[in-house]
Image (cartoon, rainbow, N blue to C red; front, side, top):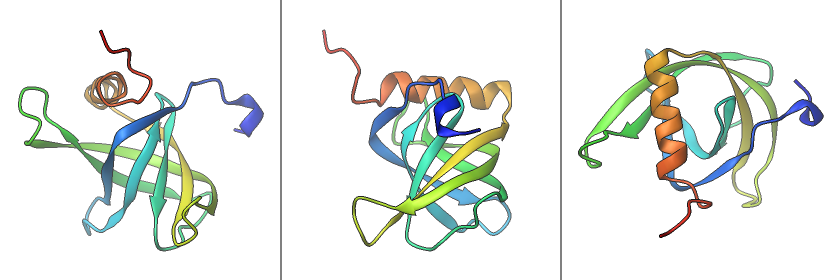
Length: 120
């Protein structure tokens, strides 16, 4: 998927959600923008491009934001570059496998925690 073929509007988030590897529970980084197709992660250590990762994201629970739910995902790293903060890296990930429940939580987070949200 090239940059020109990307159709989804990226949503910058007001909260950076942590992403962990399944199994080792190692923090990979934090999501800084999110679409229904994938996300951009900022992190400190280099990650291989074109690599599949089984991860989970800690999203706030619906009723109680202080409680966290773990949303498992299979993702593919598509690109990597230096972040605007030169001490960090940014990597783009595409969702490869996500459940209906994961899709629900991703859409909920996009609607609730993005900068573009309309204030009434």
